[in-house]
Length: 494
Image (tube, rainbow, N blue to C red; front, side, top):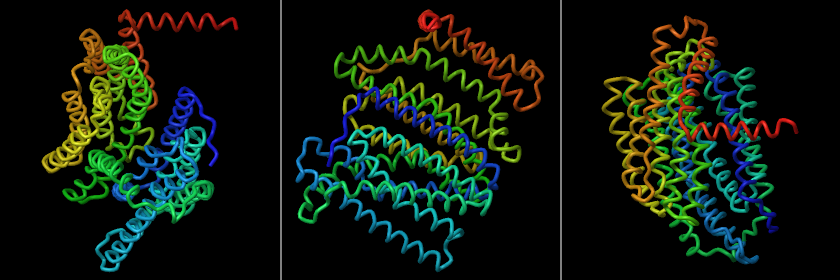
């Protein structure tokens, strides 16, 4: 198999970062269309069964995608590649196929006995499990080969094809959860099928290379990581299952899912970009310069991060209802408290994550795994207590407190040499800026603006002006701003 020419770390980062932006843009395009065309009940059904689909994908992958990355034979000969393709890829893929077939048989039996409320939706959701599991495995092979260009381009094409197919089906076929799942299944088959047709012939699978001992090595490595993925899914998506059990109203689940999904975009905007940018840097700095240098990097990052997270939280509180109404329509506006509350929780989580980052630098993955399970169980317990008392908002409180609580646990167990806290002066200035914005907004009814678009613009101007002034009172951030201005002025003649 030909080894592709290796790109630099910077090139990989730029490719993946650009892909993330384009994928996130696709989400902002599809979200208002989907929420406007689907009823709250249909959106709830879709969200519920897609959450179940994610659980099955994590189970049926058997951790093989992580093994595909870890055990790729970068210096191996043809025999080594054959053993890898057979034992790390083909055998787990076939095991996943058998598990998926068993799930489909059980589901067919449940449908035949009338146990399922939405059998068509269930079958369409479960039909996507196998291609998604195999697709994750194939994409990890590309990542192991450092084919970031193909990987990034494929993720963007896949996401935008999904958006296009979903819109076409909703507009011209059926505005229902089953229609969305049909569109997604068709795109999965097209994209993943094409990827497998291209990739599989390049993987020298051979019966003679089968070695159960190697298969077990891969499974022993990957299963703990698969369990960690499951615990993360439980932490983020168990709320839907708890609401189905305790409320049993897909319309309520739909409203909740609309607000929560939009809040996740806020989380992706900050946390995903932060993780992708900070983790490789702290890993390199820790290996080359030590813990003190890592703390210095984290402190430099946290200074603007605190202002940004406080500013976005303030904007959510002032105009989150307007933003959601513009995107999702007035009849879904009841989802705005979910969006605002969850969004603020996620922004707090981002700040705590930056302070707590460090366990994996000490390779304490088992600690991360155990703490994630603890947080997931706490989320389930909190949902059980809070949903009967507060309805769907109880689920928001439970999930928000759990994801922030997990980061606080990470901070507690983080080695002392890597812990940092934001400077008190930065927190104080950000809090004062937040108070000024909220006070002015309340006293003036956001300058008397009524139209949702105008209110959104007014909130952006207010928050931008107040927080911009607050940031400029910080000597370090002021120096950064002046440096950027000088660079821009220096480039102006060119």
